[in-house]
Image 1 (cartoon, rainbow, N blue to C red):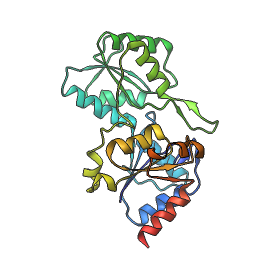
Image 2: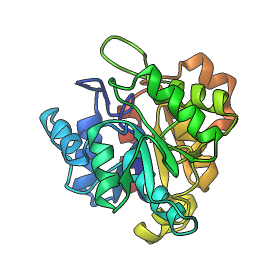
Image 3: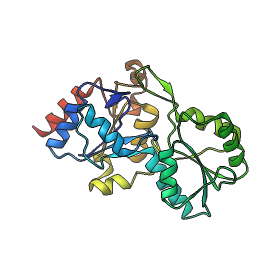
Image 4: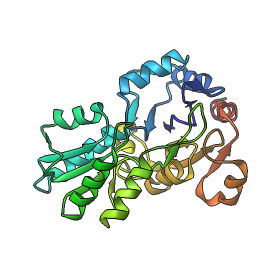
Length: 260
């Protein structure tokens, strides 16, 4: 049965691999269990993430990383197939802007048909103000991901969600969400893996994105207590997931028991 595996807080925290993550991915590779890494972090190229995983000793095969940036551009293309969208304002890094331009859209911060909001340290208060006004005046609104904070070596730090929430509050418009917990991949992964939705297992550390994504798509929800959710919080919301694990060692034991 295939896996969709989160990264931040599940496989690594910042630049540090989490215990037993390399062993788990190595086990999947040896047993030829299909999987993808699905991350809401939109600011890195998939190949860079794969190299980062390899540097941590986590065997990442080419093409296994799917980012919220990739999903957002897919969402943008789908929207443009139904509506007259050619000019796009991107609040994000150069990687995301490049992806949008590669698909034939015109980058335009002045008169966009659509505003695509992501995360970058360079985003200014002025850009957030302009985006809010443009959306209120009729531009479509897409967001890469809703995460308001992510794990790092320094603890939890703000991320895309706080920018998205500010723009939504000021514009009065909720975005089309591309990354988790969007159900946009509900049909994609069962077709890719050649299985039923309930056979796919989502492994992640967040209730509001990873587990909600699994529930929205009809996948199995496996919660890891290695990132954003404490044991107490998990016990308060048992309906949000199917199984809970303290660490990857427990997931390895489960996978081995299925095959033995």
